[in-house]
Length: 254
Ligand SMILES: NC(=O)c1ccc[n+]([C@@H]2O[C@H](COP(=O)([O-])OP(=O)(O)OC[C@H]3O[C@@H](n4cnc5c(N)ncnc54)[C@H](O)[C@@H]3O)[C@@H](O)[C@H]2O)c1
Ligand SMILES: O=S(=O)(O)c1ccc(CO)cc1
Image (cartoon, rainbow, N blue to C red; front, side, top):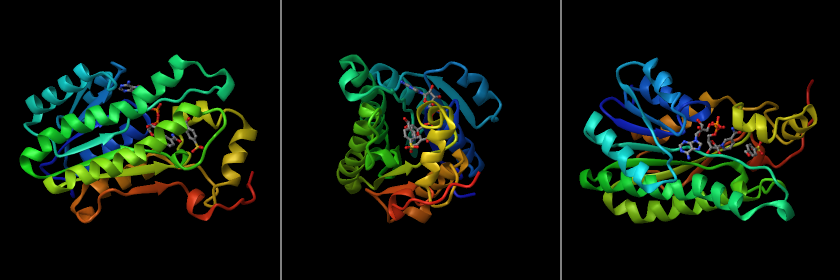
């Protein structure tokens, strides 16, 4: 087990990629605080055993984030790993997008990663070690016309990862990102897998010819959190079936 004795916070952990990350970190021996705005997370965490706890928080609100850190310290005594994963999307074309929806997506996807990252890092620097993982997206690089605030937030996350890595390196705290392609979760089903045509468009741009599973992202989170990645900081690793690196259109199988 690569993460014995470690304490992790995973945000957006009630379902999807966050839940897969929480399960994988637990399997690697970590204690995990699952955090989500949905209170159903309490029942989810209760099924995962004694090393899993749940804290209900809106990670875009500083008071909730401070309470999340305090609850984790009270439960487990320290924080070694933060997976900044919570995120939302909002479909609207540029000319129809409202100011409120732009602000809301930026607050939940980007500002939350600053708030949680700063609060957790203030604990990590006391021990001169720690690891923060920011969940980005291929859409940090690839724009989608009707996902304006989403793609803006993900581009911002990649720069946040770099600037946090620079600031925290002197304290032994590593900060990296993960950029998933299309992963089979509720968010992707709403955003880009809503019709057979939309699914085929995604698959035609994915050389491995399929969508990813949340567990395939969680494995990279476990790697980045482990000593195997001890000399990595400031990177965003893309987990996308070859989409960004190969940039090639492929035939779609039925
Ligand atoms: N699924 C994909 O294809 C894909 C691709 C690229 C990046 N991502 C990123 O991965 C992350 C997880 O996505 P997912 O697909 O698992 O989505 P999901 O919708 O299945 O899960 C997101 C979780 O975040 C929680 N959440 C939302 N707002 C919150 C808030 N303010 N405070 C606390 N929790 C909140 C939700 O309740 C939910 O449990 C997101 O950052 C997303 O942008 C997903
Ligand atoms: O399939 S992807 O283009 O990677 C994609 C785009 C947007 C979202 C969320 O809005 C998820 C996946």
